[in-house]
Image (tube, rainbow, N blue to C red; front, side, top):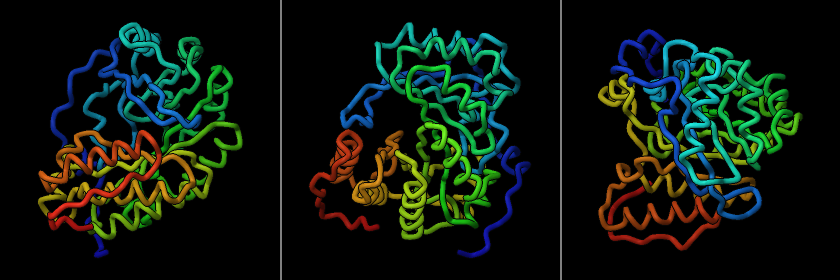
Length: 315
């Protein structure tokens, strides 16, 4: 990899489009989606995208800040958001509280609300939140003890490529990730990892290789689940990198291959992120079939027969 340009937090902020207007008393989105569970079955998960203060780490590829506030939300706002969503969603036994950043960042989710939040989570068998390694501390353990279900914390590993990880402005090392996982697993908290497929500065073959290395690294530490996310443009700075030739979105075939190979490791659950997945399909003939095959891998955690096509799409 050639030495990539240094992109500062200031550069990332300067390239941003306008932030969306959000209501601190209402989650900016909520839905129910199926997910293959640790029990070996497809189970519904209520996913609530909480509205709160932006993450303090301005990661190069992140676009989640678009639905955040600039200030800490008032005490009581997050419980009201959870109530708002649960009153409108069908009943499930599993819940994700995703807050575009770090659940245990005191400036995002006021700790004074933890008890009220935990009370609302008592019916759920699993509770999944997202967090940066720097916020993985005793506060996670304390919250875990307040809920009846199993707490699982999702952490963005992104990539084990040392130079690329550093350039993502994530302000995290692989050692930070490893220490966070060891701490959480030592306190009976499950961990899932987010892994980027083809982050900036990598070619398509490199993107595949480093995604697989990242899966292996995460599973070796005791991570039980990995979500592979195709890196996309859309936050301002990523379009600039794309225009400069330092970023290209991965192909659908690459996502299919990484998901398949990750499952064949037999080390933990592997999910492919299918948000806006149609944009990655290069072939109109096999694209729908490949998307369905990836979806089947997500839902069954098995590898179905391959999709054949006349197209020239390659890894």
